[in-house]
Image (cartoon, rainbow, N blue to C red):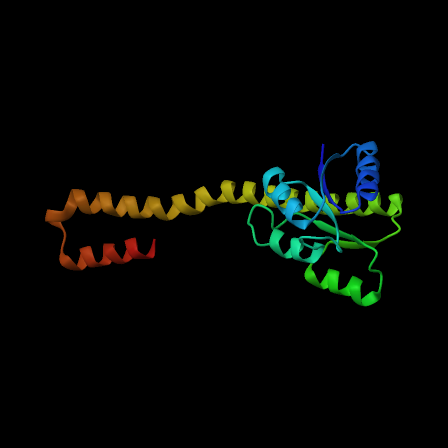
Length: 180
């Protein structure tokens, strides 16, 4: 079950969003401002954050910037939810790197669609990363073993034959080891 952090300073709006998301099967955590939200995000590592912008203590923009500073939270998708609906406000939020920007009054359908789209995108990226890890772990041992076998073979040869081989041969074998 996916976890969503809601950061909203208006209790009724925060409660409504939590109710909507819980009815859709999400676990929710909530915070009154960006500072509380940042601490919760670092503790709980939610799958996604929905945050208001205009809040006391720490606004949504500052929350976003702080969230992206920590390796454990930098990849958590963030959706801004705000009454600031001017195109310049939306553009500013998107230019910061937000995953979406929804305006109030809130459409529950838009919120659910946006959240599901962002979570699906993250899931696709995670699957690609898992495939990449699997491919690396499958092919990398072969790529390491082949040169190591050459190095070990030449080293063994040198160890066994050292009194019987010339400096020229030793130099040649050292070249092969270096190439491997």
